[in-house]
Length: 275
Image (tube, rainbow, N blue to C red; front, side, top):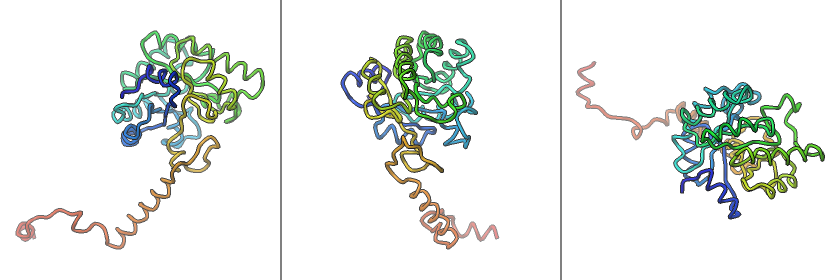
């Protein structure tokens, strides 16, 4: 069944967990879609896992459109959500609507995601009024890494927890169809989930959220360097990749590949005439 903003809300109402993973290319999107994820997030995390940046800040609209277009070709049933990159929506409501429209029209996304609470409600409302679904993002918002002073858990004090809950209400009122809660204490995330009628998608926010999302490189053991605490490795695809590449290298060097099985024939008389 085709997943939409409406079906995600229906899943929350039915108590069914929402399954979301990141993807940044056609092949990965095809596999995730075939496995039955409800939603694919084309995250600006591609800046780190695909482009090698330190954080998400250098990612451009062109980067996001390019990768979203590839993912949308592979996702037949999943609800494709594309991140709005840093400074594509903070500058003005007008810029937010124009750039959201580009991710839908040029990238083929079904919805856009932007970070922030009360301060971006005008943008959320304007984008939704333009018939574009919006997924909000609260808690650790990676585009604010410099303001936060690093990647830190959010909402641990009373005042900060109160603001997170207030922001959740405000983004819902502005028209968001779902919200990602990142690096939020589990009990606070559960409370927010209970209070909202829109789905919550957790990442490092405990099991009380309506759904979960992970960066696929983290959950498949493909991450280079440090793996964040919030991620669980469900397979060691990195080891499989390394073994396959090593076997390929050794086979070519030893002359074991390619064999006749992997080659194409031509009549010997043609070769003789060419000599």
